[in-house]
Amino acid sequence: MRIKGTGHFSVRDYQKFKSERKKHPGRNEIPAHIERKYIDMYPDNLPEDAEHFDTIETEQLEYDPAKLFATVYRRYKYKQSKPDGSTEFFIANLPEEKDKSLAAPSLKAHATTEKYMWHMPIYRQMQKFSQHGIILSENTIGDWINGACRSLAATYDALRTNIVKAASGYMMSDETPFTVLDTEKGKGKKSHFGYMWSYCNPVDKLVFFEYQRGRGNKHARPVLQDFKGYLHTDGYNVYKHYGSLQGVTHVNCNAHACRKFHEAKFTDKKRAEHALMLYSKLYGIESYCREQNFSFDQRKEIRQEKSVPILDELAAWVRDEIPRLTTLRSPIGKALAYFSEREKQLGMYLHDGMLLMDTNLIENTIRPIALGRNNFLFAGSHDAAQNAAIIYSLFATCKLHDVNAYEWLKYVLTAMPTFPSSRIKELLPQNWSQVLVERELVAEP
Image (cartoon, rainbow, N blue to C red; front, side, top):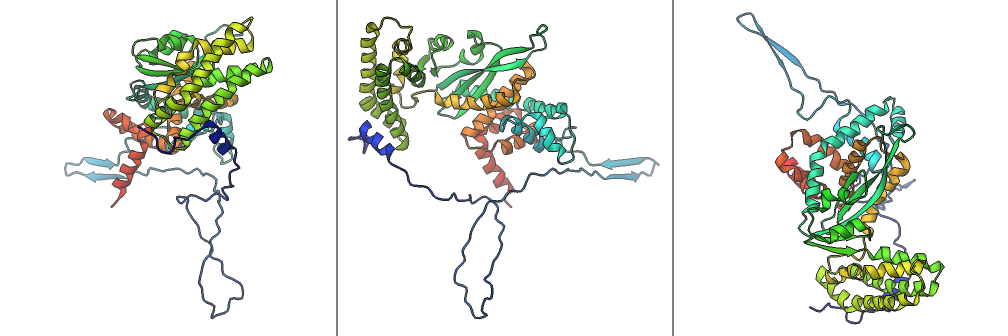
């Protein structure tokens, strides 16, 4: 197969193209789905015989702050006197999905989204509620959020199955520290440094987080022991272990190798910049493929033609430079050794167009956890940390599928009490667009 239009492509041409100044896109247009309120304006001193021939519309985006309201279920009671002197009473039943909580699903979804999507601590939410005259305790709002997490447990398990046994067989993995308040520890040691393990399927756009108390092999086992396919990670030894299992092909992240050379620029500028120049060419090719929206097969072909010689040149250069160093403990020595030890895994992406060059996608999915960490400082317990993993998983998947996390969560919390367990996959964020279509069809007269 030959890719149309790529025969004369060169990295130099691409870099020149990238340096051209882009035109300003102009003023943003307000999306069509936004409600419009029209204000008709007529000229002053308009003559009676003037003829209207055109209308100019100027739009400005307004904001109406959210408001609280109460839904009151008024159940009228009736009675009927029987001939035998007895009395029969009648009263409507409450909806099956309604629980005894003060908060309706919409409010629980709001509190949960505020905390985990927009990183607003509960005490700040309390302050916002107080401005409406609603005085709530931290425990009350916390119970709403925890209850929402418990309601999502089955959906979370279905997401785990989807990502572990995905048809594409492609998973990225990473982990990030997660501090937890641990009351079981002795005096003076109230916090535990656990880890939020993250897993991402770039093809199916799925994200799954799991809280674990540590960072060893056993803590990755619940997810990785059953995975088969491409495992794309950094150079951490735990991933090396699972990457060597039968049915698994280990792929390493080129961004991590590239960062090693960036760190070496301060002590060995010449060598570091040579490696970075070659990496710049490789990334330029990847950017070109994205802009052209190439298929997996097309991306593989252009990589074989353009990227393989560049990576081969980099690998040969690394092999030549290592013997010339007196130590591998220097920054450039560590960079060269890192690349040399993982040369095969770093080049694995060249042989399958489905694979990405690095794991930056999963690092971006971890970012909300870091932002939340700055606001919350720690989780209140190990259970709370796992609740966070549930919410982060489903919200991150919502984001990859352009799903409104609040609307999705409100629907799920409303539907879950009576939703058939056999159809739980229908509630996953990646299936949300189909759910919306079905809802619109049902609503049609």
